[in-house]
Image 1 (cartoon, one colour):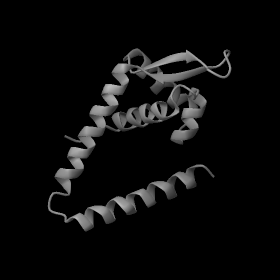
Image 2: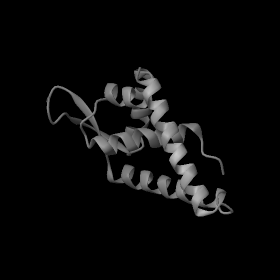
Image 3: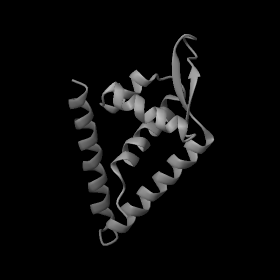
Image 4: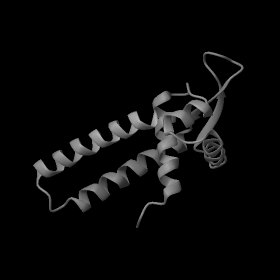
Length: 120
Protein backbone atom coordinates (compact mmCIF):
# COMPACT_ATOMS: atom_id res chain seq x y z
CA UNK A 1 0.00 0.00 0.00
CA UNK A 2 1.28 3.49 -0.75
CA UNK A 3 2.43 5.61 2.15
CA UNK A 4 0.31 8.69 2.79
CA UNK A 5 2.08 12.02 2.51
CA UNK A 6 0.99 12.88 6.05
CA UNK A 7 2.76 9.73 7.27
CA UNK A 8 5.95 10.78 5.45
CA UNK A 9 5.83 14.21 7.11
CA UNK A 10 4.99 12.68 10.48
CA UNK A 11 7.88 10.22 10.18
CA UNK A 12 10.27 13.02 9.19
CA UNK A 13 9.17 15.03 12.24
CA UNK A 14 9.63 11.97 14.46
CA UNK A 15 13.11 11.30 13.02
CA UNK A 16 14.22 14.90 13.55
CA UNK A 17 12.84 14.92 17.10
CA UNK A 18 14.59 11.61 17.78
CA UNK A 19 17.94 12.93 16.50
CA UNK A 20 17.69 16.13 18.52
CA UNK A 21 16.77 14.18 21.68
CA UNK A 22 14.57 16.90 23.17
CA UNK A 23 16.68 19.89 22.15
CA UNK A 24 14.59 21.37 19.32
CA UNK A 25 11.59 23.67 19.48
CA UNK A 26 8.77 23.53 16.92
CA UNK A 27 10.45 26.45 15.11
CA UNK A 28 13.75 24.54 14.89
CA UNK A 29 11.97 21.38 13.72
CA UNK A 30 10.15 23.43 11.05
CA UNK A 31 13.47 24.83 9.84
CA UNK A 32 14.99 21.33 9.73
CA UNK A 33 11.99 20.04 7.76
CA UNK A 34 11.96 23.00 5.37
CA UNK A 35 8.28 23.59 6.16
CA UNK A 36 6.27 26.53 7.47
CA UNK A 37 6.11 26.81 11.24
CA UNK A 38 2.30 26.74 11.35
CA UNK A 39 2.13 23.47 9.37
CA UNK A 40 4.76 21.85 11.61
CA UNK A 41 3.00 23.19 14.70
CA UNK A 42 -0.23 21.46 13.59
CA UNK A 43 1.68 18.28 12.78
CA UNK A 44 3.43 18.37 16.18
CA UNK A 45 0.09 18.91 17.93
CA UNK A 46 -1.33 15.84 16.18
CA UNK A 47 1.74 13.83 17.20
CA UNK A 48 1.28 15.00 20.81
CA UNK A 49 -2.41 14.04 20.81
CA UNK A 50 -1.52 10.66 19.23
CA UNK A 51 0.98 10.05 22.05
CA UNK A 52 4.03 10.03 19.75
CA UNK A 53 5.72 13.22 20.97
CA UNK A 54 5.67 15.14 24.22
CA UNK A 55 6.35 18.79 24.90
CA UNK A 56 9.03 19.33 27.56
CA UNK A 57 10.82 22.29 29.08
CA UNK A 58 14.07 23.00 27.24
CA UNK A 59 17.18 21.56 28.87
CA UNK A 60 19.02 24.80 28.07
CA UNK A 61 16.28 27.40 28.59
CA UNK A 62 13.46 26.53 30.97
CA UNK A 63 11.17 29.15 29.38
CA UNK A 64 11.35 27.38 26.03
CA UNK A 65 9.41 24.25 25.03
CA UNK A 66 11.04 21.47 23.03
CA UNK A 67 9.80 18.18 21.60
CA UNK A 68 10.79 14.67 22.66
CA UNK A 69 9.69 11.25 21.41
CA UNK A 70 7.58 9.07 23.66
CA UNK A 71 8.17 5.30 23.77
CA UNK A 72 5.14 4.95 21.46
CA UNK A 73 6.72 7.47 19.07
CA UNK A 74 9.92 5.42 19.02
CA UNK A 75 7.90 2.29 18.20
CA UNK A 76 5.98 4.03 15.39
CA UNK A 77 9.22 5.38 13.89
CA UNK A 78 10.96 1.99 14.14
CA UNK A 79 7.98 0.31 12.46
CA UNK A 80 7.96 2.91 9.69
CA UNK A 81 11.69 2.39 9.05
CA UNK A 82 11.13 -1.36 8.95
CA UNK A 83 8.32 -0.91 6.39
CA UNK A 84 10.54 1.35 4.28
CA UNK A 85 13.31 -1.28 4.30
CA UNK A 86 10.84 -3.99 3.29
CA UNK A 87 9.48 -1.80 0.47
CA UNK A 88 13.03 -1.07 -0.77
CA UNK A 89 13.92 -4.77 -0.70
CA UNK A 90 10.72 -5.65 -2.57
CA UNK A 91 11.07 -2.94 -5.21
CA UNK A 92 14.75 -3.72 -5.81
CA UNK A 93 14.41 -7.51 -5.56
CA UNK A 94 15.63 -7.98 -9.16
CA UNK A 95 18.56 -5.57 -8.78
CA UNK A 96 22.07 -6.78 -8.11
CA UNK A 97 24.09 -5.52 -5.13
CA UNK A 98 26.01 -2.98 -7.24
CA UNK A 99 22.76 -1.45 -8.51
CA UNK A 100 21.36 -1.19 -4.98
CA UNK A 101 24.56 0.47 -3.73
CA UNK A 102 24.63 2.91 -6.65
CA UNK A 103 20.96 3.81 -6.09
CA UNK A 104 21.59 4.37 -2.36
CA UNK A 105 24.65 6.52 -3.15
CA UNK A 106 22.72 8.63 -5.66
CA UNK A 107 19.71 8.96 -3.36
CA UNK A 108 21.98 10.15 -0.55
CA UNK A 109 23.59 12.66 -2.95
CA UNK A 110 20.12 13.88 -4.01
CA UNK A 111 18.91 14.31 -0.41
CA UNK A 112 22.10 16.19 0.55
CA UNK A 113 21.78 18.51 -2.47
CA UNK A 114 18.07 19.17 -1.88
CA UNK A 115 18.64 19.96 1.80
CA UNK A 116 21.33 22.47 0.79
CA UNK A 117 18.86 24.12 -1.63
CA UNK A 118 16.09 24.45 0.97
CA UNK A 119 18.44 25.94 3.57
CA UNK A 120 19.54 28.79 1.28
